[in-house]
Length: 237
Image 1 (cartoon, rainbow, N blue to C red):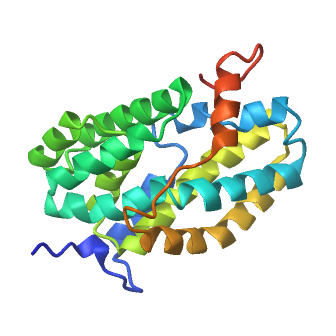
Image 2: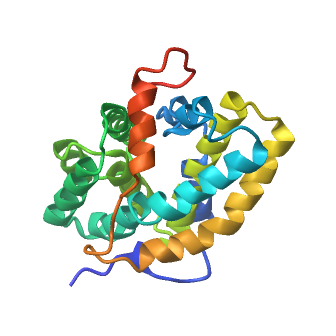
Image 3: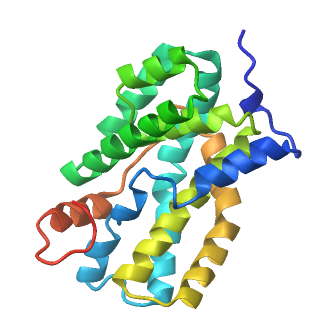
């Protein structure tokens, strides 16, 4: 039976692992996350988001209702699967992610960011040849590629998920700052709220089985579809 170090739930993290998590949470990671708004820009166009409070509530709801029950739950299972090189499990998780992308825009984001993160991992030479080959053969969606990157940090699983979630939160906050628009102080208040919400979202993700995982978010799908044909937009579609 495979024992994956990243699946442990400890309170201490090695300095090198902590730095790796900070690196992976950085919005400067060259994988293109800054170029997507995940429905937020369309929500602004429709008047659903119009100020700091509505933007914060929107992103927090997205964290709790879709990220924690979907992509984060996938990463919670994919990280130990990468540690064990359970290729069948990884393929099943990757297929599930693809099946939840309800629009061309969502599929583009999952595929493009997955490819970019795989290229980043290749250039760093941290993953083994077998891991890189397996990832390339999936081919990886973003949650599966990020799970591989997080697994290499050898950090506790809950802390790895917190890093991944905070990276997502930073990208969404930057999207709100550009599109609402909001000031830098408002962005910091958004991040403070999200930082308080992320630990609970991580616990939700950790305790979901396959049959409990879901990505039911019809409003996001509708907004993503509208964004694909929106006349004026900042973010990629």
